Structures are given as C-alpha cells and as structure tokens.
Image (cartoon, rainbow, N blue to C red):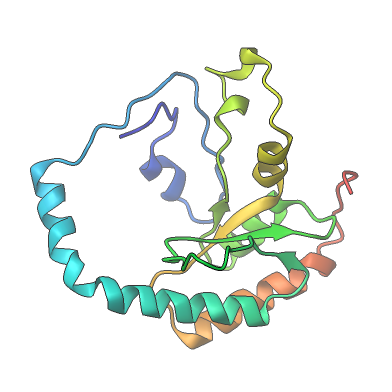
Length: 174
C-alpha cells in the first residue's frame, strides 16, 4: 500500500541521518491485508493488552517529562491505545529541525499528520482546512513501541527539552 507516495518507506528510512518528507504526486491505493498479513495480525492479539499497557506507560512518561510542547486532548469517555504519540510544538523552532535533531541522534520521528490537500494530486482543490494545516505544520510523532527502554526515553526527553531552546534557528510564524 503506497497510497501514492513518490518515495518508498525503504528509501525514506535507509539513511537515518537524513529526514525525507514523503511526497504524494498521484492518488494512491490502500489495498487490504493479504491472508499472510492477516494471519500475522491475528497471532498478535494475544499480546494486545500487554502492548497497550506498555505503550500507556511510555505515554505517561512523555506526558510527565516533556516540556514546552502541547499534547492532544482526550475526551473523558475514551481511552487511547497509544498507537502513536503526537506532540505539537509551542516554541518558534520548526518541527522539521526537531525531527532532524532527533534522527541525527538515533531517534526516529516523523510528521505527526499528513495533510493530503497539500500534496500534488489535491493541491489544486483550493480547500481551506486551517486546523489541519496547523497540526500538519507543527506536529510530530515520537517513538512509542512497547520495548523502549527507560534510558532511551530519558534520552528522547532530554533531546526534545533541550532542542526547543538551543538550536537558535527560529521561524517567523509565531
């Protein structure tokens, strides 16, 4: 399932020192699971509750230790499964500079929300989605896989907390 991406996931991730933002030049497709993929997914259900608990612990670490970022709000009736962990920058440093700094220090991160109306196939539609634009420009996803170690989480928090102020490269947007 490439969903129209001009570069493959492999091409984007083969060099962890370089951040490559995916580009979408055609309307793509999201084909459903093959039988093999469905079988693998089915076998993972036995680990589901354990993995959600581990991810929730990581999310709580981020929520309690990251400074100068915003987090999405959750309604009182829903419990997130922590499939991903999104942060939104508050300071004037750009999201892309932080992604680059994290990647240069061995921490994989990526854009938090892909906004298809900024991609080539939809750019001419001239739709205005200001909230989507805001989240697209300012958000990123942090690692939250269930096997992150405490020292890795501390490293991630330190890089983020230092980066918001010490890169001295500011945007004019805020």
